[in-house]
Image 1: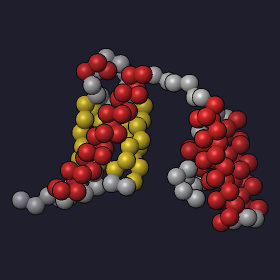
Image 2: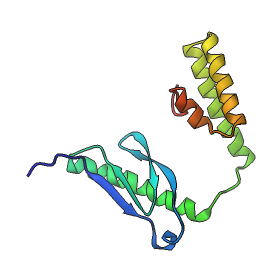
Image 3: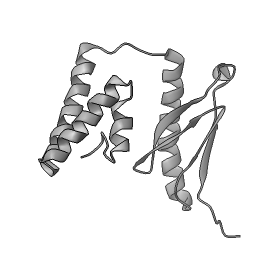
Length: 139
């Protein structure tokens, strides 16, 4: 019998977290791309391949990322150190400079204004950049 669909990873939330309502989202790597899926009692994500050997490699990578997510979920929010703030500011600065290199004209300043407006409204930089078809992982 021939498989028609891609192989899927399904993982239940750990037993110690089953009584906690999970209604967020988790961002995990799948074969070189980043996927955002619902973090509920059972996390399901397509591995985007039908090849069993490739699926096994992607499963290891995705499973490790989910285990890290569950561990961080148990720990709860952690305060950022000054070093972390500086690192995040450096990443954002590099992306903004990269955007200016590709379009040094008026368009970049509109993008920066949207980013600042989104910050004032409590949006994350990722969601604002995503709405502008940009990303923090590349220019």
